[in-house]
Length: 212
Image (tube, rainbow, N blue to C red):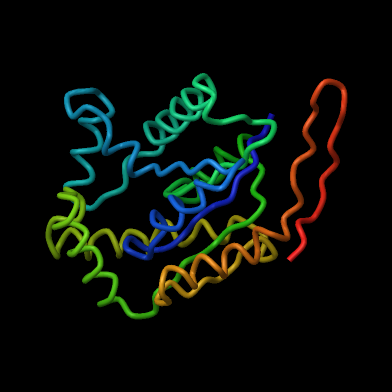
């Protein structure tokens, strides 16, 4: 079966992680951050070594290990009961990262909405990433060259992913707003997405639209 999914897009520092964590607290929504999954790997593991090699230069991890990590993570969430594919919606942050990954995942996820958190002022993103690097000791936000490389990589590769999906699924969200107002704009859209049909002891709950 395909997993129901909502995609969180935006350049590094746009606030995808912040919004994903908040939305992940809502029942039947499960946040998955690909970046966090890589950072939580042991650095002496095969995937961990790959992440360190690429992230330290501001480059994206290759497609195969990225998809492998995602599959392992979702299987783990399912096995431990933290994700129910029949009832829950995945909030995917940082994956797919390029058109090829979007194509690979076409048969794996059923995308219900895409939120593109845009920030028209590049310097604001740089400041956010530098502040985050100091606060969280994040290797991939360590210096200005790495930051600019990551932003350039996003511009060239990740932004092209949006072209892989219909415009009707894409919602532009101004990430320069206060986080509370960014969240409000996202929730207005999510509230209109039909809920999944869930079978429970022979009873099927048909999709309904959540009222405003």
